[in-house]
Length: 500
Ligand code: MN
Image (cartoon, rainbow, N blue to C red; front, side, top):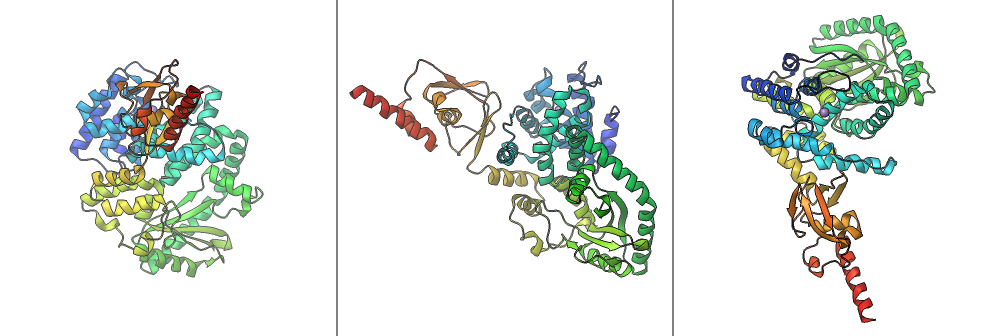
């Protein structure tokens, strides 16, 4: 995949929501700063390093993120890879942007252990929680990872496989959970290409062959449906054919003995209309025109998928009696399907500018249906939509309630209850580390053992191998039962030995 050099003008042009004057200035300033900081650095591809943050920023702009997040995308590798520091960024661009970048830098150090299925879910949940302080961090990380995957060919083969694995296990599900179909699809295809090259090529070939064959047919169907909608006075915003991603096609083919004739949604026609009522009216018109296939109507509007996806899908016998899938949705559902949680920022700006026409009437039946956390996210978005700070606070409070995530210098995540101390952290690493702890460096600064651990801190425990017993006073402040019992056990054992 040949990657062109991205320019800052292209980033500005890519904004789904063109930023106001200050926003554009912020993005350009961030570019100037990052460009100077990364000066003379090169990517593995041999291209100037700045191409990577530019490409990351362009992805963010494309999926509808705001100017500040795009600026953070431009700056995301500055503290890690250049002499410029986070505090300089904070002074120049404000604490909000600096915090997003801090989150990304910390995340870079997370070591994900184990490949067992059990750990996978837990791992990515933790990763998400660790970043939960600001969900924009996750989105920037996804854009960063997407560009790294797009340029993976320049890395050593063993590295390619490792990164593709990690991406498939962690980032693809996160993109899916956040409903960012646009990123998820491309990431999954890229992983597939590196992890199962033969299957990838075969599936891609099969898909291309079939698509070529179907092109004229889809065009004909679009024309016919358009005509019927017009006759019935239904306006549509857009209608287009959309091919399935290679990897999703592969998964589907596996279910059907690799027989592509049994995959009905290789290419689907997508109709985007004004509102929910128009969705159902359009469905009626499509069914009047083409006979529906029994049992193939899926109403994800009244029953959204767990990640919030909404649309109506139906399979019909289209022109010439051939099978065709049709998907019907509103513009907002469409943006949410493509950009997921990122659509939050998109709609926020649109609302501010009075572009209210995309907003649907509130439908309580839908919003109360799901209790899963992503659904909850969407609910919060609705409720707190006017206030991004409050939205972030809401996320923080609920996701991180009673949970602290801190890191070892090697990037292992230690999960602790709220109010836990450095000693709890030490015992969480290993009982012996707890027993021999004498002090700690927290984010590089010396701290007392009874200090409270805060979310996201990097903590290095200083131990003294000659020390044999934990301090009984620690029992007054430790929070975890693991630390408490380990301290008690050690002290009791020592008492017994002394009395012998
Ligand atoms: Mn990066």
